Image (tube, rainbow, N blue to C red; front, side, top):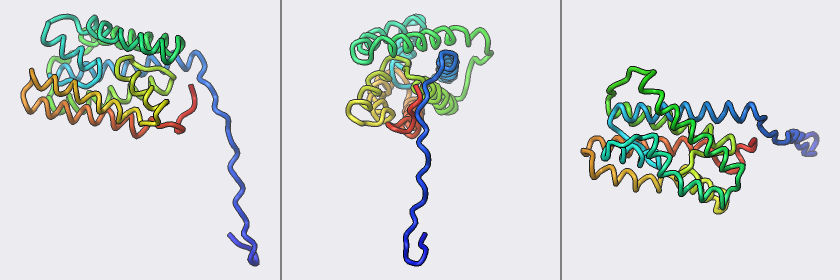
Length: 214
């Protein structure tokens, strides 16, 4: 605004320093993210759909082989845990391992606690991926990941400035294409749409500079 030709600049807003999460907040955040992500995977499986990343790959392998999803999820995540140790340090890796273990544990619990034997494929693909995306976002906000492609996406965002959601979306295309080999076209299309939705949730809500609490 102006007063007799003099421009008066508005007073700058006070800068509030970033505050780290307490240990209790970290534990609660990782548990919340793990519950949401695992519930999303449960809904996806009930609808015969899948998602991207190592979770989607584990779901795909479980259906083809008949092996346990929980065990496969941990196995396919091991190389990315090793990457996290070398590139992100032990604190991040231990938080990620804890979050991944919680996802595996809750994934084993849901079938016994929730009577959901079947779901519409499109509904499962969209709602399941939405739940998983919000779960991953919560975990990211607490300085962690669920291993797998999450680690690669976060590294690309931190070191190259590429939004993590879009990086992961590109990587997830490979899993969706692999699913195309065993699923019919309608399921593949629903799965692809769901994977895009998951990564849009991350891309729109987790960008450099938008969240500093760790």
